[in-house]
Picture 1 (cartoon, each protein chain N blue to C red):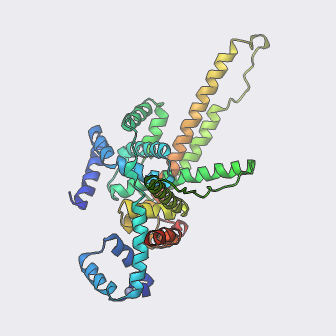
Picture 2: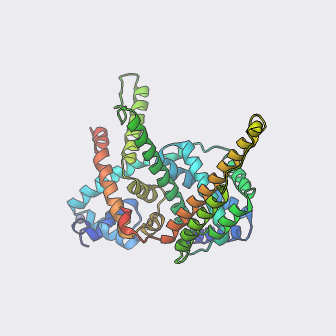
Picture 3: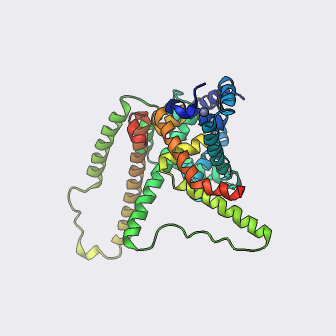
Length: 198
Length: 180
Ligand SMILES: [Zn+2]
């Protein structure tokens, strides 16, 4: 199926949902369940919460069925809801953590990973896991909107217009978010590649 | 072609080049340019390193709960059981379409709804309870009322949160400067 046909297909399905066809909702869920959960998971790096928020996304899609009009691409609309919920959750968590840190003096941040000597396979596994951990932390360290933009650009393969639609900003703002995000990632991840080439 | 590294306007070409999303013609010209331009080669190598590092964050290893759909349909079903005013509220305002009048109108009505809700929920006069009957009989009713109130508050809270999001959907990129 071509990209245009897939977009058309989603809109058609949603219009059928609007007309009361629940089987079409099941098809939409089938098509977008995984991308939505993966996107939220990469944003917040917690599977249980990712699933919970994804549920809320589809619940809102269902609630909006009666008034749905295909004026924007379905995925743009879907990811606008998804991004909004994910960013709201992150904001609430930050507020909660801020409140907790006022209550306790516990230091923030994660202890550096210790990679011990050992059997080659175990060591490789640990190195891989340490590497992945670095990548996840680098993603996590990005400002929220930059992170959302990168996740949509890199993993969902959305173009600038779609990302702008999902984030509610201009295309040039999206480009700026992406440049800065990739620049930060380069700086944070450069040592990983030095390690490989040495 | 002009080196993308020399113009901020063209800089996204390198991102698109790395993502392999350039149109065929531009891709060919970029291939030829990158072959001779040291600045682009360095930039591209750095971007490709990030790109392949991100590939390692593979969410496909995630095992999505097998009861995900069942839980979702249960929640949808539960919403059908909501009181008529909550369903009506959602039906009127659950629009994801950007629209000019709807957000302001919605926010105005939300304020009115909160005011009405508070007026209905707050007793105008304290209920006189004879002191002798306060003991055991009153307790279950009080607990029940508190539970119903907290459910209503939760529903109103949920509906208001929906409105906040729909307001945002309606604003359709109005505040570009806030995006960064
Ligand atoms: Zn160049």
